[in-house]
Length: 407
Image (cartoon, rainbow, N blue to C red):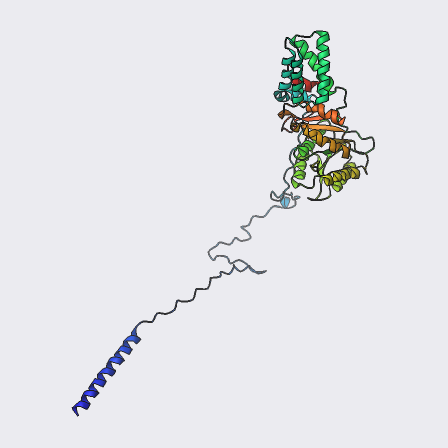
């Protein structure tokens, strides 16, 4: 009996401990899962007032009566209203049109700039000719000086032969006599009797058409813009044709040059047909009654046959309006004899009538003037002597030679 009671007591104790354990565990705080992220707050835009709605007037605001509102008198109310230009939508003032300096004597005014880089040729020749004994070695040095200046082999031989003969016959020795002798022979070599004027007179009742050609990097587009200034300075009205459609910058650049002197620029879409732009430029020039149409063509690499053929196409299309009056080839004077290779190829395609030598102020090789004229049989008509807008000058043989040999 006692054993049964003991077993019952132990059972009660065990059951009580288990229930306490369960209750204790149930009382522990359970870890809840994290709440979901809050949805973003969307702020609705202020409601637009509907037609007929009025803004709410603050209650403490004083409202004026009809007697307090000032009304215009009868005379003021019947006056004609004056239009006031809206400063926001008004057109920007057009840039002022520049007046280029006259071209007459421009090369003489730029002589100092040319002489800084060319004097080495003239002074070198005068120094050699002033030697007490003009032996064979001295004459060879004179030849080398001329060849180094890119005069060319044949013109150099001709000049040296004439100098040797005149020095022998005249017995010239004084510096002043030698300078006069050298000046005369160089002017003869450059060609004082060649026609130098850019042909801007058309035999027909249409504008004269001038096409500007050349390879990349010679300053062709800039030269075309400067040529427009030369023509405007001489009283000619000009229309520009931006037929270099392969570079959008070229058309923009040419248009900027034109706007500065009041010349309109005809241009087409980038990558468009250059011949079409050239045709339209001449057509617009005829419609406006312009004196001259200047056509700037793309910078052609003379080794690219297809591009040269396209240049020939531009020429043929333009000639549907009438003959080309001038075809100017732009050459970089610093390229020297390599420029002659370019000149030959262009001459075969478009019949060059004149040469523009750029960057002549940056080289001591002024003899390229002689060499390129001999190679093409056409004269140098314009020379570029700097970066300024009016640094393109008509070529004058005497002024050029005077810059070569100095005072």
